Image 1 (tube, rainbow, N blue to C red):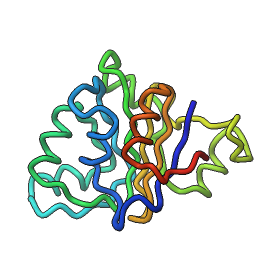
Image 2: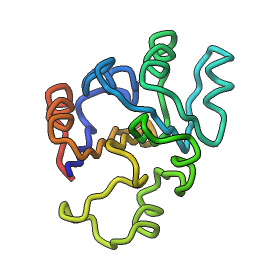
Image 3: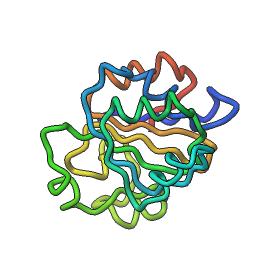
Image 4: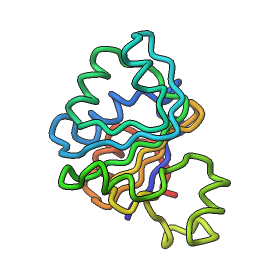
Length: 159
């Protein structure tokens, strides 16, 4: 499992259309569980959708939404989950959170060693965190996806 944080590649974080396109865009076959959302799209229908506790949306629906309005995400956790899992199966687990302090208290390890990297949602293959507009973090099981992220975000650091 790989985790990278990009803090210096962009002047402003996080525009998810750029991140998703960097790791595969329309070629990704996931549903996205989006939690801990703080974002301010101008389009009312998008704002209404993103003002919920969580959103489950297909990859193509998410890309369509972001192509309609590529707004900045202040906070948010994006968990990529195979479409084989139902909404009910996804929601059996605790919703992912973004706070580093909370992660350290909630996850079953107490240090942030590279050997102990995990994705919060047990069904997720990828976790992307928009952190207070200051950085984007990606954790993924597939090294190819991590490498795609690194091609776009060359100044990223492995955590």
